[in-house]
Amino acid sequence: MFEPDREQATAREEPVGELVQRASQQLTELVRGELRLAQAEMKEKGKRYGKGGGLFGGAGLVGFLTLQALVATAIAGLAVPLPVWAAALIVTGVLGAVTGVLALTGKKEIGQAAPPAPEQTIDSVKADVAEIKESAKR
Image 1 (cartoon, rainbow, N blue to C red):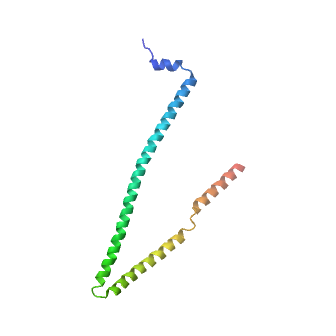
Image 2: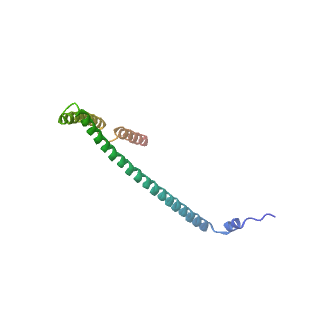
């Protein structure tokens, strides 16, 4: 003859309240475990993001120093046929012109992006609210 497992027999004998309580405890333990796992994962990712950000910062600094060396090289190259002061003045003028063009272009882009509020989304939400109000009146 077939005999049911002990767990099945025990489960039939336990009151529903105890089963619900045990299920609730197991669910709580499961959620807590998942939260601990997520926390550990985010901590690890945070460390990697921090390390990556530091490396990007270092790359930015070295890139800035490289540009300074390039400017010095341009001045030295122009100083061969010209006096050093004239070579430095020419390089400074070119860099100033590039700075001005970049600043004006950036200002234009920012002006086109203003205002910073998501106007299309706001309009869409207002339309949705109006439609809900209209359908509620019907």
